[in-house]
Amino acid sequence: MQINKNAEKLIRQLNNQGYEAFIVGGCVRDYLLGLTPHDTDICTNALPEQTKKCFEAYRTFDTGIKHGTISVVCGGEVYEITTYRIDGDYSDNRHPDSVSFTRNINEDLQRRDFTVNAMAYNAEYGLVDPYGGKNDLKDKIIRCVGNPDTRFNEDALRILRALRFASVYGFSIEENTSKSIFKNADLLKNIATERVISEFLKLICGKDAVKILDAYRETIAVIIPEITVMFNFNQNNIHHSYDLWQHTLTALGTIEPNPILRMTMLLHDIGKPSVKTTDNSGQSHFQGHQLESKKIADRILHRLRLPSDFINKTLLLIEYHDVRFNGSKKLMKKVMNVLGTDLTKQLLEVEYADISAQSEYQREEKLGYLKTAKTHLNEIIKDNECFKLSQLDINGKDVLNLGVKEGRDVGNILDYLLMLVVDANVPNKKSILISKAKEYIYGNQINK
Image (cartoon, rainbow, N blue to C red; front, side, top):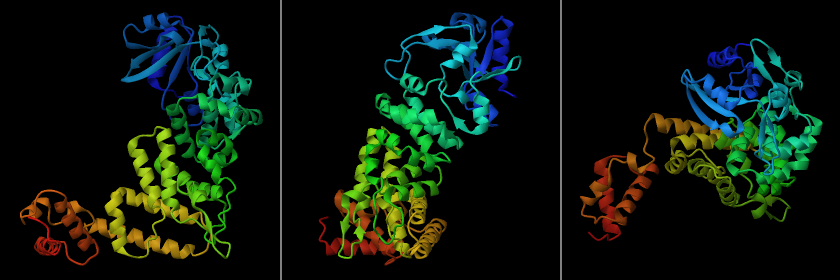
């Protein structure tokens, strides 16, 4: 196994002082999968103070010395070196109340979450794998080390980590581990929101996200209880062949694994049950569902404490996901005026995923309009066509020079001129826009 050269150097330094040391956990898993680890953690039988003494010539930090962890800077990167330990009780379902140090690597591996993360390696000893992690990797299985109930009660975040690993790596979850996830799902309520959402965003971007979200929907509902209204909800509409949850998952699985886009698809139709009406023929309709979905999503995303930019973009995509592009370039410009170029590109991805998850009724026609909309978008960008105020060949100072007093009227005039240009009623030329501004001022008797 060709491991990180800095980690190799640190292990050798510990060995030279008479101590044992291994890379451990997720980095070993990733090496065995042929992936490059994001982090390389090291464990050792040296006590924290002994570790610090070993690296006197290095820059070190007492990252978590109470729990045996020292951070060492090597080659410009930070490496955590932790003493082999045994964890005490977890009264908060997240952190051990106490730890005790041990000289036995197997005892340290015993406290870890899953067999695929309970392996250690160094060049001298090779792979230390007391719980069959290598075989589980080969068989693509997520299995708890020891009793799953114990593991999840120690740290409830492991429930989401199991789902995340299964989603990202395309693994299945071992039967007893799976049963324990359902049994202990409510423990997720004890976990900090920031930790939960970090795992959840990785989960929904995994290659098997649809499979895991469907199989463990009741577990996901502990985090986002609002999704339960979508389960088995019959859309009863000619445009749909799936129930609402299956439509949602199909759309989610169609779009690229971008956290904002995946979250948009998860929540884009969540307001449908609230606005459902039925016509005389028995067909269901969901007028205004995009605004209701936006309102519900707003509550969810703020409760999950996602960044403001993430929330704002997701809500805009949900609000506009049902825009019916009809071949009009004017409509595209109006959408771009609100969303901007990049978000409009993402909106077209959202609409493609949404349409692809609908019935075949008028699908080709809808996709045709969407293709035209994409052509219009590219033309507008390429030709630098005007769709926002900053592109107008006239500005606020020009309006003020016409004698209009500073204030709301200036903005109203500019908005009016932009509408004329977007509607292709007038060209974006200063002389013409000045003339149209004068007509507006006179017609609306604006005070100068």
